[in-house]
Image (cartoon, rainbow, N blue to C red):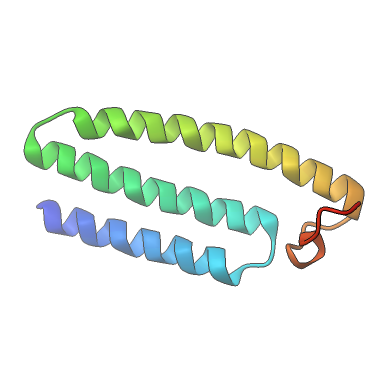
Length: 99
């Protein structure tokens, strides 16, 4: 498989994640779609890194994975507080910061 196949797969994953992020109204689904988009970018970085025979893309992938882990931890904390205070995880019910 060459670079084109990996980039097409990465593009499809990213577009699926972006469409899900825009369409979904549940916070958990939105975070899962965001993770899908981050993984699509990681796939593109690794594909370019392999194609160019450099490790720079793999280093960036490691940094993106660290950011994704932090985002998941902070997102989970926000979801727990949102559910405790509002009783729902719907984005429409969480559009204001008033409790």
